[in-house]
Image (tube, rainbow, N blue to C red; front, side, top):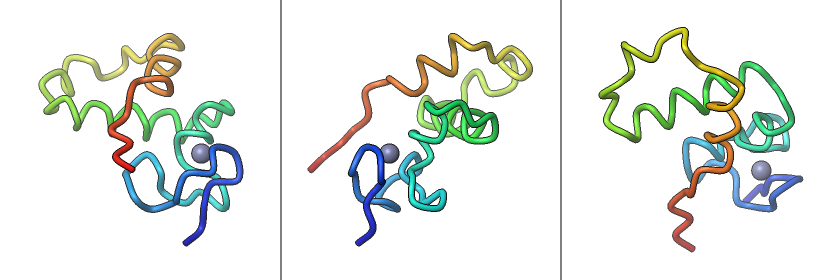
Length: 77
Ligand SMILES: [Zn+2]
């Protein structure tokens, strides 16, 4: 199984760990990739039940993106 070059977690085992060409989506977002940050944000919204998916649209800030990348994941290992 492929692992992320940065965080070494197995790729493809969670939405935020999807393979982005060697790195996981979360690390791509941390590296500042805008597309990855949007995708991470969307994943976290879905995880929260999508309650604020509509009202939060267009309100994503740098803080939100940063919070998204350091949010505690369920890394059941
Ligand atoms: Zn990673």
